Image (cartoon, helix red, strand yellow):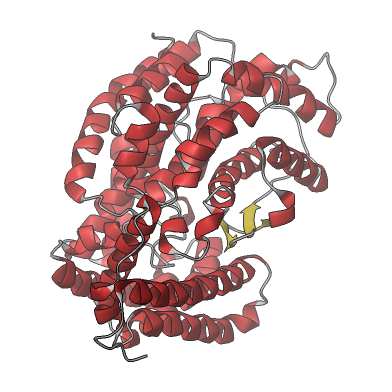
Length: 506
């Protein structure tokens, strides 16, 4: 389309809405293709799938960077509603990101990350970082190229340009003080938590094996109770749990272990938190930028609110304990199925290698290591070949663990192979926000936790829907959190939560 001087601001905005809707539908298609790739695609299709995904990514990028987009965005005038104004703001922000990166680089990154993801699956299974190194070198090179292009266009540092893709407005200068405070508090907090834990009866893990179909049935029932709309989503299995899919087709995954009935359940609850956010986004703004989730810190706050704040609470376990017992043939006389025992089990502080299995107290250390590694790699202060040694050394420094296999170290996460550099900090920022939201929700509705003890999650969801989910990208993360809780994101509620739950300190 060639815009003309006769095009009104409203007409320009209407044209933009149509184009962004088309890009939204392409994003939906990419979501389903990505889900299939990670769940059931045959390995022999990896090259063909990479080409298909790259073609759609390029098509969307070409729509975003069409020659007349700049003029349309400059001329556009949105209707006077706050959401329409925010929609135009988000259009301009997304265009600025996309216009900074040439199509050939978008295509090269898509191909590189698709191939690297498939190589990662084999490398992780074989605990062989060296086999992944060539593909990961390519992904890192393309990531640096993208970061440099966006940094120049947006007036940001390369790492801040990557952060802004996942959490608009978040900067390394915002993250560093949070991590510095946590790094200062965590050593004493971990020691106190371990000492308090030692004063309690040691938890007893239920004895397996645990039938996988039974675990899946329990997971589906828990999703439904939490509020997941089973007519607009599904649960599947993947190597790494995730939430993906498309609008009105939100797909989550978990991974099952026959000797553990808790990990898969907590993974399902975590991903359901993400899915509830996606299913609660403003339907009037489907396929528009303002109708998307605000950013990954807020997204992670929803998953961690459900998993850490809710599912690892005593009220939740009071409700869940008999369901676990019934699902796996336990008895009333077996102390392993007692709600208090299960609560001690799911809140056990025990430094471990795997980030996704880490307890709340030690989890920030895992993120700190990844944050240090990726900022050094993006800045060129570290060679990728040195990553395993550096990663393992920091895990030993912070958690006292000696990493003996790559799969227990830098190979355990899909983020870097998939090109998601700048994502990791959002996990800890999300944990901070989750505690703040839970504290505010209980302050506004003191019945929330007692309702959860009865398996009624409706009061919590009713609090979240208008304050978080329905806001979409209509405001910044800081504004959404402030409006919901009365304060901008801060570590106070998070540290209070950790001390109360793990150290029995008010």
